[in-house]
Length: 208
Image (tube, rainbow, N blue to C red; front, side, top):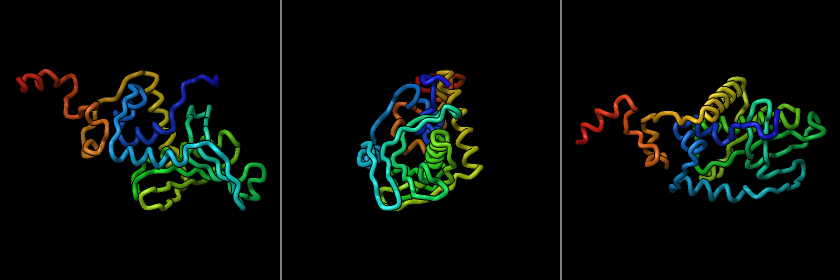
């Protein structure tokens, strides 16, 4: 694989899972709007986004670690990767990625795809299995472990393939109107209430 080959950003996996159009607006059109929630998330990430390595008894903690898998065309940055001392991982330690989120708890798949993508990248880079990771919820200060099951890996790679097609086609997906639109900081850019091209004429006629 060439070093400059197009890679799917790890963060795009969560965006795609939440809303295909949101993913296109962010990663194709470079649009972003700050909201109270996104601001809280940004502040939380600023606390862990300074690259560095910390040594503790029985483990090492790497922050803002750059990740890449040429095999799966994924790339990005992990908030934190803990390397536990483990006799089954004598040369590297057992990698355990941790993704930071602002919410008290996220029961949806979105963040799990991003986290699993980090595990897949670590496997490609280190040549060792990465069976699980965790999502840390800033509001509750609790951590939820996520097993990288065969299904989750399949969902993650499927999403990565679909995002890659979007990036290569340079076409932003159509709007997906729903309850999630009310909480999306990109609503004013997306305008999900507008119809598709086929219905645009009648929509404009109704406004006249």
